[in-house]
Image (cartoon, rainbow, N blue to C red; front, side):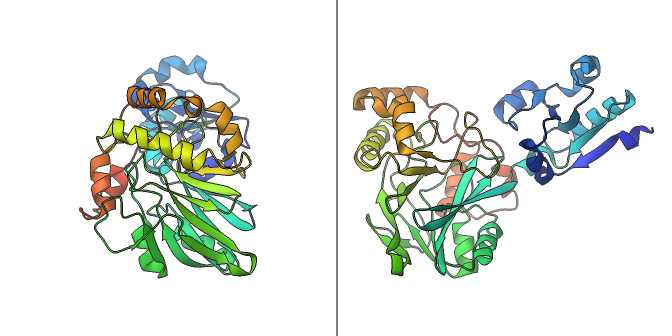
Length: 366
């Protein structure tokens, strides 16, 4: 068989469909170890391109091999090396750059509403469409606003409100674009420094989704990660916590360079606004990290009671929490200052936007 016949291509969407379902899948990332350590697809095996020819004994002969790199060029060279040894493989089209913009969805009934969790797998970003009756709200939308418009069309909903939980520092918000295309109302906290038109949230603001069943989404101020951080509460059933509370940690308080003050605020938000809620309240965060397993058709979410017992930070005293938070914040999100400027409206979105936000989210305390 010719070497070219041993090399195929696979898209990120096709790979996503196989991650849970194909036990024979074996992913080899041919980037350098520091690149892979910084950002990777869960489950990859790192064999740098320069070492691949001398590492063929480490490549399982009965596996379905997928080769991965930053954009595809190194993976293609790796596939050619394997092909010379009669080993078939597929090259991930677009590499990690394409993975960063790959989405899937999970849909379920929560508290009388339908919740659609839209997952940007390469960034660990989570956003939501919450609907009932004929209307819905979008929470923390990304730049790919067609994801949210498609969900609304599929369910016969009108998007009436678009909400960001805070001024994001790790990825670009699509809130303004979605408002422009849908005619929805943009709701944001005036405590974060936005420089464009929006309707200012007030604590306790309610948005009715289905008046006939008294179903509402309400806003709750939870400063700490940012001054204007806001969680949204779906009755007593669920909270959309933004970067205040994750499944594996809590939000970092240092991105505004007021780490100690913000850490105290975060502690109080958690203990005064979040932890008093019922153990059965489902926590839907805005991000997840590498410690969180993600599976098809299962929400990235957990009951608050589980987190109350599994996250040591939630049981700390205020002084211990602040000391821990300040000691454990590590590398900041790539290009975070520029991302903040764009999201707050003081810098124009440019053509290199998607390149600029490549890499993992780093909004949790490690």
